[in-house]
Length: 360
Ligand SMILES: [Fe+2]
Image 1 (cartoon, rainbow, N blue to C red):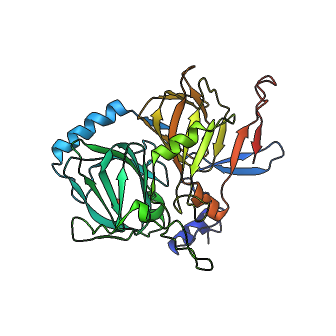
Image 2: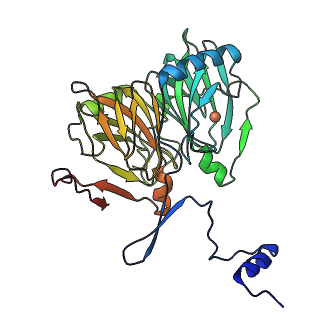
């Protein structure tokens, strides 16, 4: 007699490379719940862990990498911040790493469709990244863009190690199976422009040239900008975004970046977003508080902040501000209308701890 059970059907379907939509995928990272009326709701679970890489752990390993890898070559001498809760990446869409180029070295020229940025930690006017022929100096806390498919090589012409944070959209690009990469075949490309050569004006009616934009955001300008910001919200403190002045939008198609300032004693409210973030601590010390744990941080530490994890920021100092460089995959979510945020309301604590989430 034929077995007409559902289990038997599913087995026959599987043999034919078919699967019922009713068959739950237990590997799918989602939280399924039913409300009081029995209505099913699904939401993502945070991808990866909230994690801190402490500078005092990273820095000696970086020094050892300089001994173990005598020259950086085209494979960069970069230590990737691997999230312990993920198979790949610092978040599920982005990777960050800490890279060193020693005095006299060149990290060879290459290009890839992956978008990338560098945030200088230890540098000077003698540390350079060349992007599509543009010579961009890397002083401490300068931000340098290497957009997708732009040739780039890094030069340390100073007498001390150059160190920076790299951030790239590697996991996102690999998930789309779009990995194109090539080497120039020369150590370095020709330098034909300096950063100041980027045109500031164009003739009316001429379409904007997408390459006529800054590739270097000097810290001295951002530092002035954050000095002038006095308004802090209850969730993030103050955030100043780096923008593409041609579009008014984010600096890269897949990555936006901010400088976030937590005033002295800042004790922020809970919030979460479907965007994931990575932070580098420029100055100060504090904590990221989650619902079940707290992660402390101080200067030069790096943080992975997964999507859809409820968190709040605390500045541990009552006298000094904390300043964070924050990058996020928000532009990817904006492009498809996926971005969703929730914020604990400002008056929730005053109302006796009743916490309500407000969708934006
Ligand atoms: Fe690269």
